[in-house]
Length: 77
Image (tube, rainbow, N blue to C red; front, top):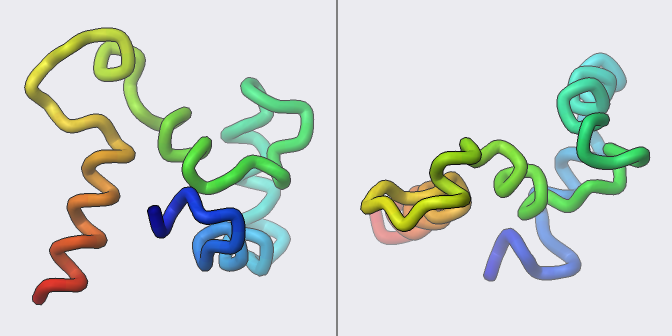
């Protein structure tokens, strides 16, 4: 829920990143959108999930699930 909320910290931090970082992110995500700087954080982590994990029902956690697990672990430690 933290990553998908319309007003989340991740999107704000990405928007405030230095220009060289933003250009690198533009290159990374330009294949999936014409406006990579408008891409939401949750869409970035889904895009970074390997295709085999998105298309199969394997026991492995998808990248969004891994991020959520790391966030929950950080909150509980």
